[in-house]
Amino acid sequence: MSGVAPMKITGLAVLALGFAVLPFVGLSDYWVYTVTIGFYYALLAASWSLLVGYVGRISFAQAAMSGLGGYASALSVIHLGLPVGLGLVTGVVIAGIVGFALGWLTLRLHGAYLGLTTIAFGEILRITVTAEHGLTEGSLGLRVPALIPGGSRLDYYYLFLAVTVMCLIAMGLLLRSRIGLFFQSIREDEDGSASLGVDVTLWKCVAFAVSSAFAGLAGGLYAHFVQLITPSMMSLQEMGIVLAMAVIGGFHNILYAALGGMLLQVLLEMLREVEQWRLVVFGLVAILMLRFAPNGIFGTLVDAVTSRRKRDA
Image (cartoon, rainbow, N blue to C red; front, top):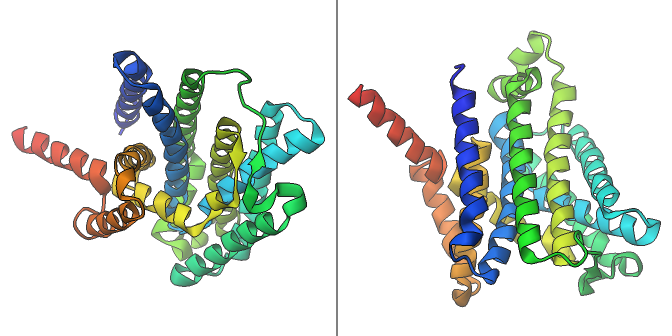
């Protein structure tokens, strides 16, 4: 087991280096922008994977938490005069607190009941943001101050890359800590964990809070990057895209889920000409992955390579 963590860190470092040199090998300005948005989805998919894959609690409010973080950051900068950096922190804190409350409200719910409750919770957030036109500009969209005033797309690209890598490392360290063991014990056997002294109530709420906080950070970064946010980023369709990204990448592993977010964002742009049919394609792919490759594309590839090495040995 001691060699697993260094191997994963090495793999993440190689991936980060690959993305770092990508703009220097012919990546156009358009695709620099596309991949930057991909980092947003990577962080969102990884944060959803943290809750679903490691704690066993499903939530369909992840996109809404991202939007909450984006709006909280934008409004605190616009109306309270906070620097953008503090605005991002505000968005993360508010998303984390709301996530903790959501975890507490859904303590006794499982399966479909939990999923339906989080859908309702996310829709309440979206409808509230849409209705508060005087504060959020509603469906017209809220103009947001830039994260890097005068910054180029390349500046944002490297900032998003750095934040995504640091967040993945932070999630990995959390999951390897005592807290991560509590999370996974709840996933495996909630009643058994409680009998061994694990405060299941507390750690389920903490899991929701941590997952929501990372989603809030992603939303805040996205808002200050595109400089215009609308309630559509909190929609069920957006949540469906995030879910498909995590499932196709491999939601049982935060890195695989993040790579799924990157991969599908690129494919979304490549399939833009077919418009809404691209979502149908992703839905079918997600269903097929759940049926034939439940570990996702990257999980299945890694499992195949590992099995082959064992046979060769």
